[in-house]
Image (cartoon, rainbow, N blue to C red):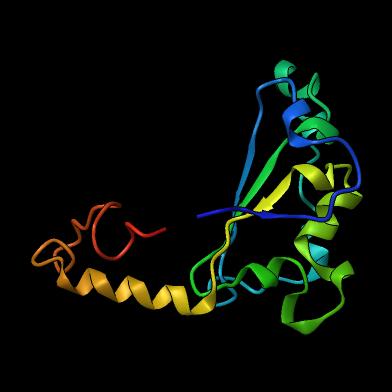
Length: 140
């Protein structure tokens, strides 16, 4: 699938240097309550204790947001139909991440119905040995 590109405001993603990529695997709302304030506690890549992380500013770190179970890409832009300022993407921008380097894996809520395909992975699904490439998760 193609990643959702945020509105362009600065340089193109092809000018990224440093070799770092930040993946955010977001929890679904059913996993944990999430408020806009929760995103403000994200650690800044520049404040990391790792020497290589400290030398790569947030402004040049690509971010890929992988929607959590049951979530839609819009949940990271305008969560619960609130204004954009409450979204994770906006919070990342405020923390110094380049909006041109923020991508959301394009998952719609209805796509999660495909997880039911795992029910056909007999017996692996039923005994807890389902594979990430199987019928339930291979599409993601």
